[in-house]
Length: 278
Ligand code: HEM
Image 1: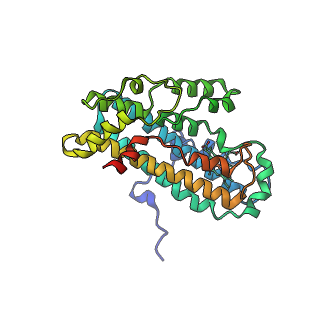
Image 2 (image 1 turned 90 degrees about the vertical axis):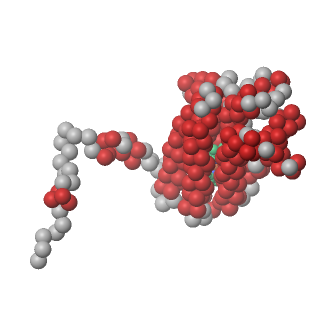
Image 3 (image 1 turned 180 degrees about the vertical axis):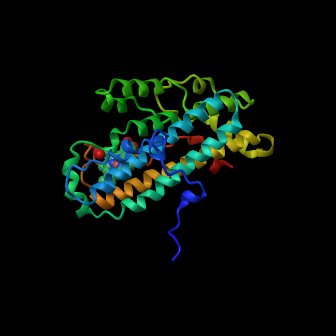
């Protein structure tokens, strides 16, 4: 009989008194200690973890989007590409995650839905921050955060900054493709509205990609990002309809009717519209 394999023989660190371990570095006690079911329903654990992991991915998306916006602001387009591509992949990851949640039937969800009270993803401040950063801005969405002044202030500050798309439009303009003044100096707290001048500027880029390679690549990165984001919205509303039908949301909206309305949001409208004109 040979002895059981012992990884210590090839140098695996086995003692962590006084040294930083994997769990220490990742703060696993805090993360794995944060799943508190409010009912005895088996599926509530899935529901909690699905939301918590989504929030973690959103945290990374914000980290990347904020940095991408900074890079674009100072004209460093290439590092921003990498970050934008990563964010699209994060949304792909979140899209796949719906498959796990869909294993929960309406009956499973009903067992713990009352325990959620009025809480809803509608109050996710990170999600709202992502929407605001990308350009889907609406000051009314600040209100659910009034009870958390620091979060409210961070969201309000975001509404005062140029969105990712604003920064892209500034680059477009600076490269010689005229973007109208009223677009460049718009009220930042509101969403960008599709504009024929912006459409003409992007169309010129798409008609001659080889002469405008970086802008063309930037535009396609933005389209890619919105494409994955749209799929997230669609997967969400479909899962919601599958689980609660047309019941009102715990957050108080009409539920599916509200989420379907959000499917109409266009973050980078001209980049989609120009395809018809090409
Ligand atoms: C069975 C699972 C789910 C159901 C039944 C559900 C239901 C809903 C409903 C009805 C709304 C509209 C607001 C309201 O009145 O509550 C909503 C919004 C939202 N949910 Fe979910 N949801 C589910 C899973 C998730 C997951 C896993 C996430 C990931 C974080 C999520 C994130 C959000 C966000 C961010 C919003 C706000 C969307 C917006 O304002 O455009 N939801 N959800």
